[in-house]
Image (cartoon, rainbow, N blue to C red; front, side):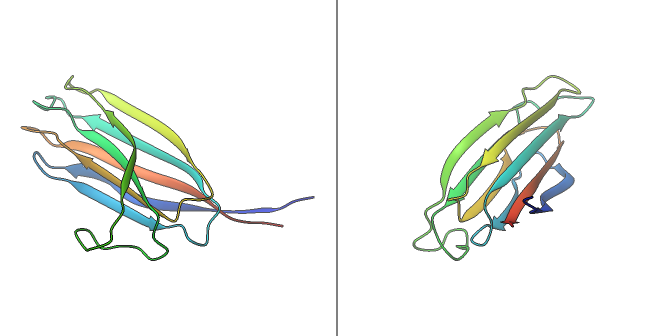
Length: 128
């Protein structure tokens, strides 16, 4: 019988992403075997003028690069928007493969109104 070690990880705990701002969360996956990422955007009672977008990025670095530093190789592998409808809820799930070393989620783009955002990850760290 095989046993798997899985850990719930938080990239972005449920929070308001203010109008015109960006909320990010990162994970170092160099010692993990991938996992499942979930993303959620919830518009408020007044929808934003421009939609919020969730971007998922990966980096091929063994150490987590700092934003804006030389040698950062973040690549966008997924983007989804939640529209501008009041109270709209967008939810997405992505399998993150074993080869990914660094993972980043960013929520950005909404204008005029804040939206609620969250990103969680079920990480696989061992199979025995």
